[in-house]
Image (tube, rainbow over all chains, first blue to last red; front, side, top):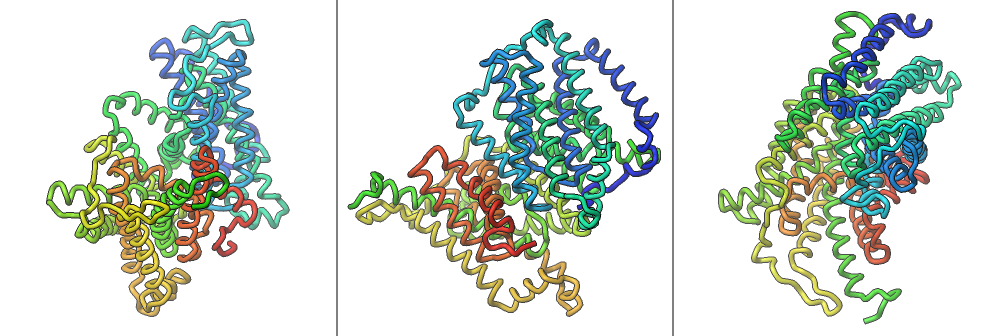
Length: 325
Length: 295
């Protein structure tokens, strides 16, 4: 199951003593950059990038570190966006509670689908997750509360903790920054915890992990659910930003996009998914007027990436600098 | 005529026929996936796109070259198969030494490219394709009206499925193929050209998709998105059947088409998801699939 060609093991010892200095510096620069970013670019665009960065990082937890290729992550991303939009609009919950509702729903969905999907491996696992995600799509299309083709529109942004109004893009931006950056740090912590090390062991050699006494299926189910929850946080936050939950978020092409972001940035790297998300979202933004050509270009990136660029951008950089990135 | 649970027989038979038609496409497509998977160990995500391409090739042959349905039924699969061979030689063959999931990712990318290109040039509104004269009209069976073309689709798919099964399970060529599926290195050592066999197998598998596309053209309008929904359902069919057996892939395809049709009669809201529900149940009871071998 060694899906990713490993580059991130270049400095395994550094993980034992907390976050390596290099990662601290990169995260610090990233945070500083994100704080000043909305004064230079359109905040809604920046928020979209951050939501997808968290989504891709959550997906990478499963693929890059768990070695499991899910082709149905749109179910958790989109499912959570529907639930959080519903919570904010119909139940009148505050933004942070709406996001939590969405994440919890994604977690339940991930637990149910994950417990079925881990019964198969490799290619079958990918097909099973895709098929269940399609089922979620049909439910979203037909169910009463999702609004069918229209989706859930004009979701109120509400007041954070009931106190701070988020109607202003700038206020919302810092809420989204806190949620997504916190989520990405949490994912980093999970990967570099003892739990994360067991995941690596399972990915590298599953029979051996079993013989060492690890309940492999339990670990797989936990990482699947965690990945679904964090994808849910991303989707729920996106629904708050755009005040909209729609079929786009649960469509199979969304599942494909997150795979693409992770592949392009570098599977199994810390910063790859963030870079991949930034590139793909920017590309979609600038090429939006070209219609279906965006699909063609995404397909070309997939093909080129798989044929000659499997390490991804950050993977290549990590190899050049001989550092774990 | 009798009524069953308050359902008029016309409705029941009509939906059964519709289910059988859908089942025909499931069977031919999952058969192609199973043939490809057997030898190449990859899941061909581009299968839906190539099915769509088959329909488009038939449409282009008619509208640009004036070539009708019957020649297209042979020519379009050959063209799609040849295209598949080019894909296999130039791209897929570079991935055989890697994890099989890369094959899935590559063919997903190819599917996006093919679909995107057709959508750019032909839009998504769909293009009409006439039913051939020989098969227009239908038969009144007393309890229902049977359109000739739909009957032909079922017959043609059964013939193709059975022919493929016969070739793989009962002929010398098929014996080589099954041997190469078990142990390609050993078969190569006996002097069989395994890379050539892999190439032709992929070509044949996608030609089946192209054939299904031509069959579908007069029923559904020729549309760039016609393959994308279908392929995901076919994936579920393949998970339910298990890809270990050719006959298993065929039978599962027809069976699930009929189950879907029956669901449309008795519980219409569930018809879109019934196959996925069955997949969940099969995963719980017999994870390796109805006809699959335990991993």
